[in-house]
Length: 206
Image (tube, rainbow, N blue to C red; front, side, top):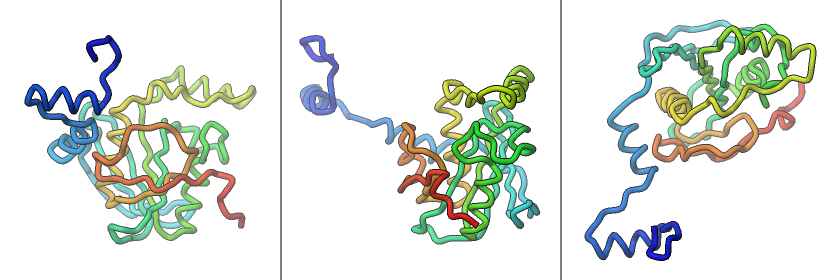
């Protein structure tokens, strides 16, 4: 806090740090250090997977804190500077696998895989968030009334970190996210750059 009780911003902190011989670190610096020296995920297996949209390489990752299993479906290959279309699908529900063109997500799972298959390269990360029986029932009943999207509040910063580290493990550095622009923690510390978003209505028609 400043002497007048207001919140100290970066310029204020720089002056204060210089006066007292202190160092300044940013949140992005902290994320970068921890992501370089720690990992929230471990890859436990890979295999080809034939989907309704062609063959992908499926990678299974275990989330170390929660022990949940997450999947990444990868299509094609790319160079480090290439922009890769990516979809982080969360929270994943069994209904996403059964019901075509679900309205609970900006991009349904089938639309995401279809788009990536058309592009010839890309990644779909399927985050398993431990869907409870009550949450599954709520989504199931949503087919008979206006559907409500899963509550975003339960997707915490750790979830963003898990998704980011899985993308990095899949070789993504620059990405165009399939979805609506949204406020999210900086991906810089994870070695990722978001260059844009692709809304569902922009998907080319057959």
